[in-house]
Amino acid sequence: MNKAQLVEAIAEKVGGRQQAAEAVDHVLDAIVRAVVAGERVSVTGFGSFEKVDRPARYARNPQTGERVRVKKTSVPRFRAGQGFKDLVSGSKKLPRGGEVSVKKAPKGSLTGGAAATVKKAAAKKTAKAAAKKTTAKKTAAKKTTATAAKKTTAKKATAKKTTAKKATATAAKKTTAKKATAKKAPAKKVTAKKAPAKKSTARKTTAKKATARKA
Image (cartoon, rainbow, N blue to C red):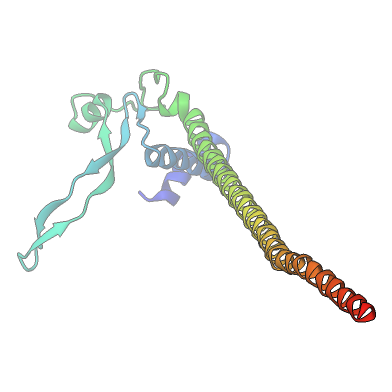
């Protein structure tokens, strides 16, 4: 029996082929999504679907007999329930009319929790997306802070250089002024010493003239 035949088999019971096809699609989709998310889907009396992790191992190629390394992988697994096993083995007989009776599914099984499982998977995806956005925002904030810190450091360094240049220029001006003052000071002293010499010469000349007149 393939999927189309399965739909035809339940079409009369659910009110039409379209409704049956949608029901089968929804059930299979819920099972697949739950198993992929790592959940165990259990239907009491029928069986359970789960995800099984297989470690890396070595196997042999059945055609060549060559030893081949098989990578780590995950596979789906179905385990038949006891009621299903009993019907297949013949220890219990199928009812002639109506549906095969199974026990009421517990909480978390396909009948009672398929929708909840799908919602959990969607909630996990949303949580992951929110976590990624939060991480991206934190990274952007760190980059902004680092850039601001670099700019502040650069400004401080520029200010220090400017202050140092101003201090150097001021020191150079003071040194130049001191040198100019030192050069001018000796010239004034020399002039002061020469002045008395002129006065002495004038006095000697006057004395000579007076002596000449007396003679």
